[in-house]
Every structure is written in structure tokens, then in C-alpha cells.
Length: 318
Ligand code: 173
Image (cartoon, rainbow, N blue to C red; front, side, top):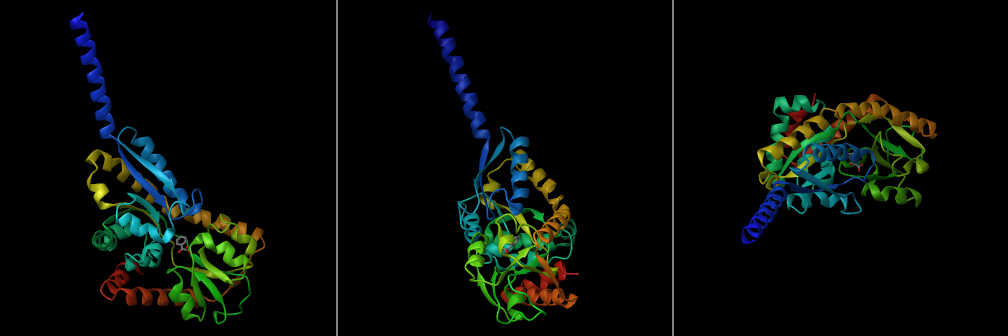
């Protein structure tokens, strides 16, 4: 009797110990997106999360808190730096308060594969480490130009008298062309258009249907300019706590999603056709418009960071 109870107890304890060990092995990372859930700029991140959670079953799990309903987009950089979240899907323009140089990603004219070879990625990586306690794991959006969208027609590149919604991406360029600018998160664009607070906005070629902006948009200005960047960042302290095996699952999923960044170009075509079908008219300006965008963009990056701006230009620009 005594011996049998002892055995049962031993078995129960053994079971408990193994359950506890398995739980200890599975790391959970808290993730946030600066873009609304299931919209274009969150989709690559959500595919990455699904892959990590499938491939890392029992080893590492990403708990997705959600998008801007959970945290304002311009606070995501600070939250990642401070470890309030472990992973973030965000663009450089949204955390210039923490790292002004991050806005330079929009000016890359080389694919990430090349920047990972030529020292451009490494240069940025050291800034992410110093200024943000972070690692940029993967850029999942590239080859995706920005445009100016308007509710009123223009006949040339003079934006004097127009009030435009911006983020740091467009500030220097639109101001150089004479516009008055107002910064808002994407979630406020619809209301700003509806109330006539702005005459237009900057946004990439894809995604204007996600939040209904096509209803309030009459014109798109071509050519597009820059290359939108949206990336997955991880907090360095959270990363340091992971085992080599756990990191491997994440690194592999990151490489997988970054390799698909150029495929965004197909979505550009699809959204462009959808805009045409929605009655959005294209105002085509000369190539000089795009050239001015790069000039104003680099001047802005260099003004923000005299130390790193010129070096980034040498590594990123054609
Ligand atoms: O316009 C924006 O909010 C912005 O800066 C951006 C950057 C990358 C992708 C989409 C939007």
C-alpha cells in the first residue's frame, strides 16, 4: 500500500516537473503593430507571426496585442525601446523621436539583400543598438512608392495654399514645394479629409482602400517617390533572453518575410487599377518632382543627423 502510494506520488511529481519544464521552455513575446490589424502594412507581420507560432510550437510564441487601438503608432518606438513590447511592426517615420535616422530607410535605392552586403544594414544596426536597444529583424515592405493624394486639382508642382496631412516621411518635400503641413496618425486621415481640415495627404500607392480614404480622394499625383519601409523590430534585452534554438525560429521567419518584400510591387499594380476604377484621377508631373523629393528628403535626414546622414546617403542612394 505504502509502496504503491509512493510510486503514484513519484509519477505525479514527475509529470508536474515535466509540464513545468515545457512551460519554461516556451518563451512568449508580446507584439504590437503601428498599422491597423489585417490592413496592408500589417499583413506581412501577421504572416511572420503565424509562421513563428507554427514553426516554434512549444518553443517560442508571439502574442499579438494588435494595432493602433492598443497603442498610438507614434508611441510604438518608445514602447519597444523600454521593453513594454518585445516585437513591433513599424516604419521609421513613426519613431524619429527615438531615432531620427530611421526615416532614412524611405530613401534606399538598393534592395535589402544588397544593403545587408554593402554595410548599409550594419551601419543602421549599430544605431538601433545604441539608440533603441533594438534589432531590425526584417523589412517586409519595399519597392512601394509614396504619393501625394488630393481633394483639389493642381496644375504643377507648386503646393502653396494647400494643407496636407503628413508624417516625417513627407515633411521636407511637401514644405519645400510650399505646402502647409499637419502631422496625423493614419487613423485620423479619414476624419481630417471629411471635415476639410486637409486638402490631401501623403501615403504609399497601396492601402488607401483599407481605411476608406478613396471615398474622399479625387486625385493622385504621379510620379511616386521614395520606397515605403515597414519592418519588424525586436527589443534587444528580450532577444538576449532567448535560446539559440528560439532565435533560429524567428530569424528564419524574418528572412522568409524579408525575401518577399519585393513582391509588394505586384500589389502596387493592383491598387493602382483599383484607384482608377474608383474614379481617382491621376495628375502627372515631370520627373523633376521625384528628383526634388530625394533632394529634400536627404537634406532633411542630414539636417536631423549631421553625423550619420551623409554616411547613410553614401550607403543607401544610387
Ligand atoms: O503616411 C504614413 O503614415 C507613413 O509614413 C507610412 C510609412 C510607411 C508605410 C505606410 C505609411
